Length: 118
Image 1 (cartoon, rainbow, N blue to C red):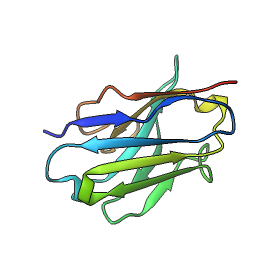
Image 2 (image 1 turned 60 degrees about the vertical axis):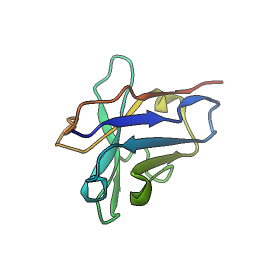
Image 3 (image 1 turned 30 degrees about the vertical axis):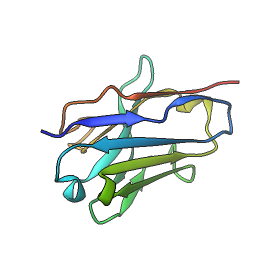
Image 4 (image 1 turned 45 degrees about the vertical axis):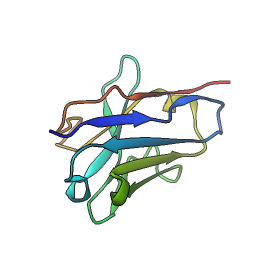
């Protein structure tokens, strides 16, 4: 069973930056596709960025050009660099292996709260 631990969230002003981390337990991280999801209050969870085991990436239109997903297989860790943050980026951010739609393959971690506000 894979365990997911997200960190790096916080309160930031509009236009600011944050870097999220996702630590993944187990020895299979390097072969896993991974993704960052977010869920704002009253809204459905959405996949905002994904990265394949080989490094190819995809982004939701809402974050394209502002967010960058990356991974370090030696550290079993995935990252999300978030720049030019907007109030609408406020949400709890989770990581998981995409399973289609807003579903993830593994049990969800606790997530990390990102709040963009002046």
